[in-house]
Length: 247
Image (cartoon, rainbow, N blue to C red; front, top):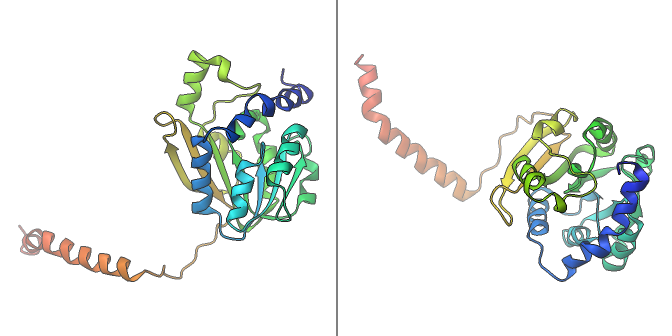
């Protein structure tokens, strides 16, 4: 069941069976995605959400002042997303990010591209083409944010709960992403959600320029630096004196 039509058919029923539950319960995995977006997506950014599902994250992105394009394989998901989060700041399109990759330029250029728990549902041999297409849609300093199950958690599911897996459910290593992309890794973290070290969060950037300008410190940061500098010198004064005397 790996043909594109089979995968699309699977996800047409996925919203009614699974995703609508997220309007009834508070999903901790999605809350972790929201925190990642809040940390890395600048206010007012133009964002492409790949695998937008029923629009829950897309609606949150609008609260950050973002203009959003949400795409999903499932027309049923898109119908629900439009009803929930559609606005003048957010449009949704039924779009196969792999099969329709040639149509990506029509979507425009983005400051951020978000793939929330999507990359594991794409066959690994399609990663190079996927990232080539996405990178072509990024602004000069644009970022790509990915969340996905940790390899350890995915292996646990495959061994103990195979019924929880979707039609395509890869075990993704960080190197699977970095080897397929020319973007620079700026953030990686393992996240506790319902269980320990359950998900991985990754941020990549198209910006490879070094900025020689020093980072501006706040008053508190400058004060902390000065205190730590004095403490460091005090703690090491005896050792430094001995070294200067040749002992």
